[in-house]
Amino acid sequence: MERIIGLDVGDKTIGVAVSDLLMLTAQGVTTIKRESYEKDFKALETIINEYNITKVVVGLPKNMNGTLGPQGEKVIKFANKIKSKFELEIIYEDERLTTMAAERMLIQGDVSRQKRKKVIDKVAASYILQTYLDRKRDGELNE
Image 1 (tube, rainbow, N blue to C red):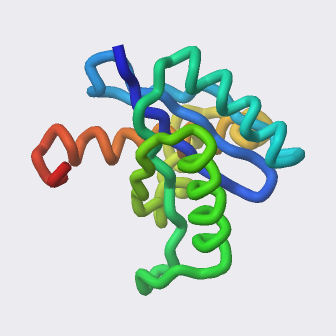
Image 2 (tube, helix red, strand yellow; image 1 turned 60 degrees about the vertical axis):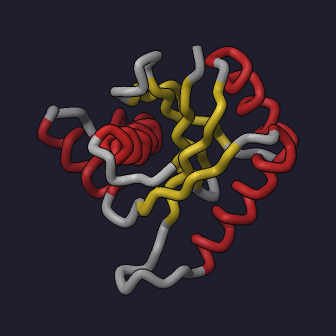
């Protein structure tokens, strides 16, 4: 069975989430601590193979006015490397408010600040992927 991976790509970490087999829900899997492209891709390759990933949903950080800033350009560059290395389809999902939403959910869940720092990227990746899965299910996407 195929699955979709969701990524929240930052300068220091990559939050990773994976869809369930029915592609209805997103589950946070891990947070990759970034050291080098080589190590980033090795960690991603393990997950891609383990979960039989066929599509990558990448959170695209945009400015509030919808334009792309330097961070958005870095994410696109990284996603293009994933696309050429693993030959997977890349889908960009607007992630402007995902980290804030993830933070708010963890605070409501009474998760300590120290623990929030460890899981925030994984939770943000889940939000990014869940947004895509919901839009796909609701027929908002023309794929």
